[in-house]
Image 1 (cartoon, one colour):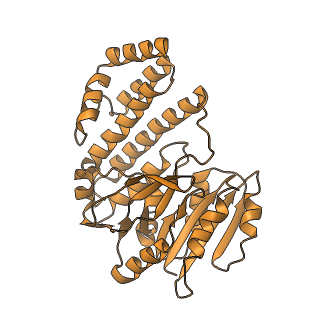
Image 2 (cartoon, one colour):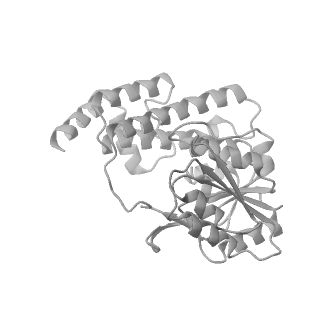
Image 3 (cartoon, helix red, strand yellow):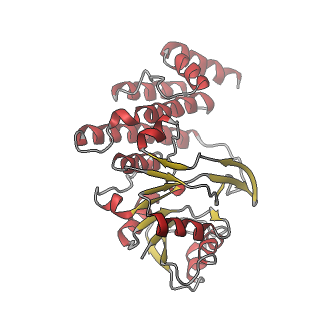
Length: 321
């Protein structure tokens, strides 16, 4: 088996058939591909949608709800392909994209394939993320500020995952960042092809509904939890990694910047924001260094690193919003 595609499924009855058929309908009989769909206790008709697709290349696993990390890990445990591709159930591939990816795997045997994406809404592309094609070291990827933490934008040699016992951690936010970071710790070469054909659905529920305070706080708390977990991982693995923490420091900085910016952008309680900053301090991620950041990020970080000023700005935003 060449390629195992793993799709965690939870209440995506509107999208899952399109996702899977965008893969299977573009595969010819010579391609060694398996699609592992893990239904994570969906309460809608997602499982029925999966069971209605009669194709020997599709493996449907049904489990009690345990979260996206557990569903992906179950897929990794069952996979037999030389390569792993983790795809989201509400996304889909362009015609022939799977064939183009497969040809690259067969002809060049890359260690890790990283590609750009299309941002789509109602089948209309409204943006793209494009990377310069070529072969890169991880150091070159980070130096180019390609801070891509999405598992679905890469195809990975399974031995890279299995040899180093990499699995998704059980958090609400940051599991992709953790997984991608750990894979990069052991990656020698990253290949970026010219092709783009992954369609990321930006608004799958057709809603811009405001997130609850509890949900926002859970996301921020779990982001800090992920950063703390990775800090321990790097400390305990020091001297055994191909790429050590120093290589990834700009990527870490960018992640912390994103967390601080979310405290500014969304309606977090100011006392909660203060606690998050304190947690970042305790884990050594605050104040944030500006290494590897763009000009706008550096300006924001300069302000955010002045805790009293930053919290004062947050209070004013809460008053006038």
